[in-house]
Structure formats: structure tokens, C-alpha cells
Length: 324
Image 1 (cartoon, one colour):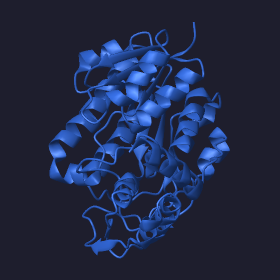
Image 2 (tube, rainbow, N blue to C red):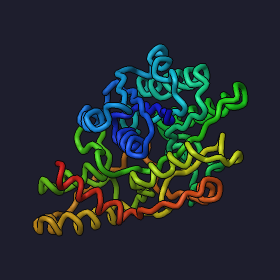
Image 3 (cartoon, rainbow, N blue to C red):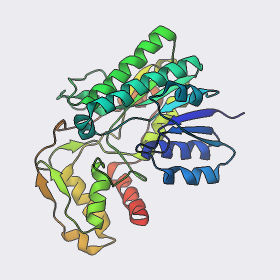
């Protein structure tokens, strides 16, 4: 029997890409999702293509019984289910806490009781908070700047306690501004890249929060898939029960991002070249600059990201052009 992997939040942007990659590489996959932010359109092609090896379970990580059912007979867990977005957490901290901490704890308990081999989970670069040091190194963090950041840091603490107390194996991946195919451009909490792409394609000016000099380590989805697979398959004993930055290790300002998007989209529609962004106030809870050190992931996991921000952005723009 091939290895069975549970992907929570598997109908979402990152989760569905992980499901697809696993299935294409011979794994059996169970997807758990309540479709709060996930989409059936991400999953239906997988149901059709992999009827023998893909299983869809509609359920909520806030329900322990759903988590127990999902982890039954599973070798590895890739826990992607969460309520993302700093602004969403500021608007509704209680629900963010219930999902990201309560749901995470449910998944840890269910994974422990099901004797899952390893628990890989989506952590967040927001954990670095007000730490001004660049690049971000895993063991140097500041105070969290949003309810979302608090929840993601608490998850790391819970994973570590479960490893020490119950012998659970975990690897946490601090994602840095992941982007790529299937990232939703719609809704109040759309991420900056799909939101700006949608604006440009509609011949509307994107709005930049602040002067555009805030910078991010934008990370293409295929680099994230690589990290998850390395985290699941590593046999290096010093690599487990660790937190890793998951990024490319390159900083891009919002102004640079807009210029890249104009360049790539302008090759498809010349009118986009002339669209200038507008500017608004900085957003509450945002950190000014984010840049990851990926040395730890290189050294312990053999991580070697293939997609720079520009290369990944070109791929993403092509996907949006064909699918929006």
C-alpha cells in the first residue's frame, strides 16, 4: 500500500496544490475541508482524475470527531487548514483563534492518538512580529503584531510541547507571502498579488498601502510544495521537531511588484502598461519588511528553491490570464 497523507484545508490555494502534487507522485490523499475559504473547483478535477487514490472528507477542524475520522489510517498529516489574513484576524479575533489554535490542537490530539508518523504544518512569517532584524532567522522573533500572528506562534509552541510530552514528530514551515495558481483574487481578504492582477486585468488602478516601499519575500507555490515534501520525507533525525522559513530569500517592494505585473500583463494587453497605482494609508498589523534566511532549510532539509519571485510571478500571471 502506498503512503497515505491527510491534507487539511486541501481545497484551498496551498492545500489543493499539495494534494495534486502528492497524487501525481503516487501517494494516497485524504482532503479535509469545511469550505469556509476552500473551493470545490480546486478539488473536483482531483476527484475525477484520481478516483482510486483521492478521498474528500467535508469536515471542520474545530470538531474533534472530524479530526479523528480524518487521521484514521493516515501516515502523515500536512496541516494547512487555518483562517489566514491579518486584517481578518483584527476584525474577528475570536473566530481566528478558534480555528487556528483550537482547530490546531484538535488536529495534534487526533494525530497523536492515530499514531501519525509526522505532523507537518503551515506556520507563518507573521510570527517575527516587530523584530527589526533582517534577514529573519528562525530563533529570533519579536512581539506579534496581530491576533493572527499570535495564533500561528501558539501553534508552534503547542507542536513543541507535544513533541516533548508525547513524542509527536513535527515540522513547522513559516510561509513567507506564498503566491501562485489558484490563489483567490476575490473577497475582502484577497492577497496582494491576485488582487493586483485582477485590478490590472480589469483596467483598474491597484491601491498600494503606504508609499510602496514595504517589502516582502514573495514565495512561489512550487517552492512551498518542495519544502512540504522535504519535511515529510526527510530521514535526517536533526531535521525533525524544527521550524523552518519557507521562502526564496529575496526581498521585493510593492512598487517593484507593481512594475513586474505591469511588465508581464502588459505583454498580453498593452493598455495595462499605462495604469498607475493609487496609494492609501499603511495597513494595521503590517510589518514593514520581510526577508527570510533559508540557510537552516538548505542545511537540514536540502531545500533548493527553483522559482525566484520574477519567475514565479510570470507563471502566476499566465495562470490568471487563462483562468480569470
